[in-house]
Structures are given as structure tokens and as C-alpha cells.
Image 1: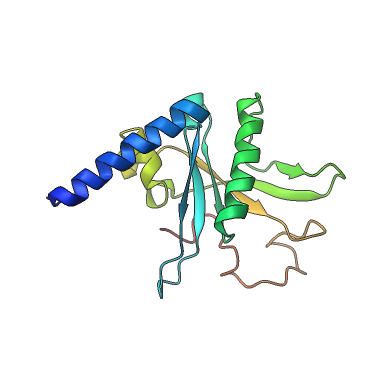
Image 2: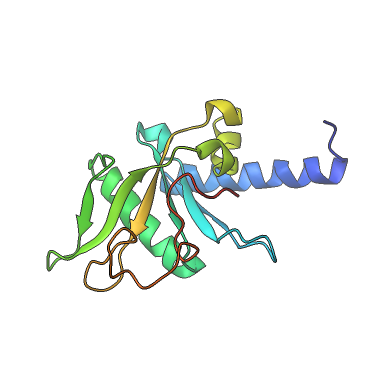
Length: 161
């Protein structure tokens, strides 16, 4: 597939910008807005944690500011030596569950910038965890009293970019 010169130039600039951010901060956050009429949610993910020996992190269904805050906070935990594992629940200072760490089974359909950064084809994507957020009181999508429908926060592997 041949790309036009403008697209190639833009991708080169994005690659250089991303490399600078990762060099400076050890990771970057890539946000992808929901496509108009696509039915796909907005999401954000880290780029750089794979280079530290950890899966990248993804959060779905929240706005840019909240996504960046969550990913930066959890990525800082990883940088401080915390190895997250699928099934782990992250709690706030009061002990209330706020995030669940889940394996993302389709990272090649989601982590385009990360795979480009690490020169990985989609079929050999960098691994990722989806950080599933809880509503106040620690209510997760799998709980009976979760008030949102499936589109609010799609389950890992049920959505793609």
C-alpha cells in the first residue's frame, strides 16, 4: 500500500514528536477521540512502558483529561517499580476499588502509535492491559448494579480503533 508524501511527512513528524516525549518522560499518552457515527468509544493508551518491560496501558470511555490523568498516574506507579498483573484491582487511599487491570486481547487493533514506535506489525503487537474504571463506590461493569450500558465502557476485546 502506497501512502501519499503528505501522509508520510506527517507520520514522520508524529514519530519524532513521540520519540521526544518518550525520551523526556519515559512514556507518552496517545488519545484517540471517538469517531463520528462509528460507534467506537474514545480511548487513550501509553507508549513507552513496553520499553520498560511492562505492557502498555489502555483506558476506554473517558475524556482526554481524565484518560491522561489515569494513565499518567498508573504509568508512574509502573516506573516506580510496580508490575501490574491482569486481575489486579487498584484501590484508592480509602481502600475503594477504582481500577481493574485486564488483559487486552486485541492490542494490534488499538495500539497503532505504540506498534509504530516499536516497529511491530499489528499481528505481533506490543501487549497491553485495559484499565477498567469503577464508578463511585467501586462498582465495575460486571457488577449487577452498574448503571451504564455496554457502550459506556466496552469490555476488553469487544471494541477496536
